[in-house]
Amino acid sequence: MYINRLQKALRVTLLPLAFACVGIMRLLAHFGVLVRIGMLYPRLGHAVMNTEVYLCERRAGLHPKRSFDVWTFKGDPASATHARLLRRCLLIDRTCFTRLVALVNSLFIGWERFIAQPEQLDRDIHNLLERHPPHLRLTEREVRRGYQQLAEWGLPPGARIVCLMVRDAAYLPQLAYHSYRDADVDTYEAATRALAARGYYIFRMGSKVAKRFQVNHPRVIDFAGDGKYSDFMSVWLAAHCSFVISTSTGWDALALAFRKPILYTNFVPFEYLSTFWPRSLAIWKHHYKDGRRLSPAEILASGVSQAMTAQEFTDAGIELHDNTPAELRDAALEMADYVEGRFRPEEQQAFWDAFPRAMSPYNNRPLHGEIRLRVGSRFLDDYRKEEQCSKAKASSA
Image (cartoon, one colour):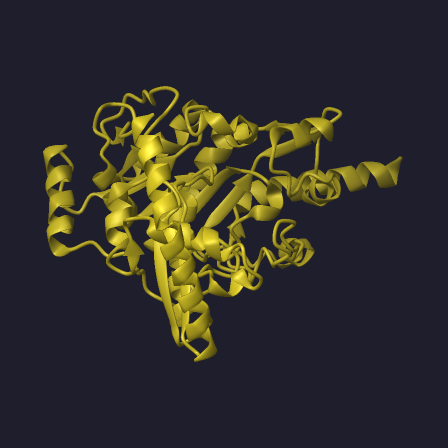
């Protein structure tokens, strides 16, 4: 209580200085020098991808050349290691005084001009990630530290690593309306065993998890639940894995920032597929209504393809069914083949031609750029066969 009062008193004391800073910012803008403030979100996904996309956009010349951007944390950073890496490529005000300046700035007309942010938050709508190298960098010392840790865990030199990230009820329980994105990690056992048989070491990721991932295999490691977890190794593994299997949650943004291929599983909402990232695959949660599985076209027509809360699915009469263990295993092996160069997925032209290029309802900006993502081949074939059977039944009736 005393600390909170002290912080409030300090903010009041600094308020005149914040107004002065805003005045100086606007004066400089008249002379063509733009001072902008960027906010670093406390949640890992936005903290990582918003800044990585911003840095790519800046390198591509999509931000004013004569701008001087200062960033500040909007709350406590989700990863101290990521915050340290960010300080190597962004000017970050660790005092958070800039947050007060941003608040004062928002009181004046034209405040948006003085905000530094990517065009579409954490979505790479200009396909810049594939054109530019990662901005997050580990030092040689940090790289050696990670390899030493792997050796202590018994991994051999050159071990191929897959990171598995499955969102569950322990992740941001205060945001329970996102529970429709959760999945059961146990359904990934067949997939991890199949990858282990291919020689991969699978690390189950996460700082907080609802239950252990108890797979009795020496190459399947419950990094999240067996006491091995550390913030540093969480970032290091994202930088050094062969690929990632994820349910599309905050941590996999680190893999994107380090340009790692991703297999998205149990993905939802449908229209938010991360279409911008090449060398990646996706399979989505099955949508059922009145006991029947909906086709992709029917998902789009159902009104929930951009739904952001569990209640929206309930109101629409939609039940979400997780991917089956067999679907997850097939997709994981296909991803391994893709990464190893054993095959290249088909173009899937008809599917992506029908996929909407929608605008975000939150900021009226595009959700997609050029399509690079591919759907798991067997997964999509199953939908195609089901659609063909439905058409055949309809024509014969």
